[in-house]
Length: 109
Image: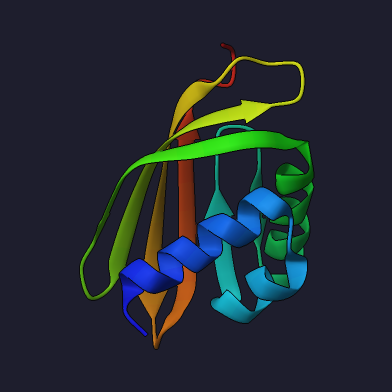
């Protein structure tokens, strides 16, 4: 499956907090880096992403770019009790699965 399709599946699963789908999309040694958390290994990363998804009220994708090994998602992220903020998520793929996730947003906003 193309990285663009996998990135879209990831985003849909993230927003809904679908841990099973998130787990199926990542490598066993996946890493996550974000402004308020860092995690490594599929279990820890998926648990954190599912928790994030449970707090997300909307995440409207504005732009998604991808090549053979990377995808970048620019979105407007809103969590319960907070207005939407711009967010960027970079996904690096290995062997058709997500090996690295980096998310950037202004956590103080």
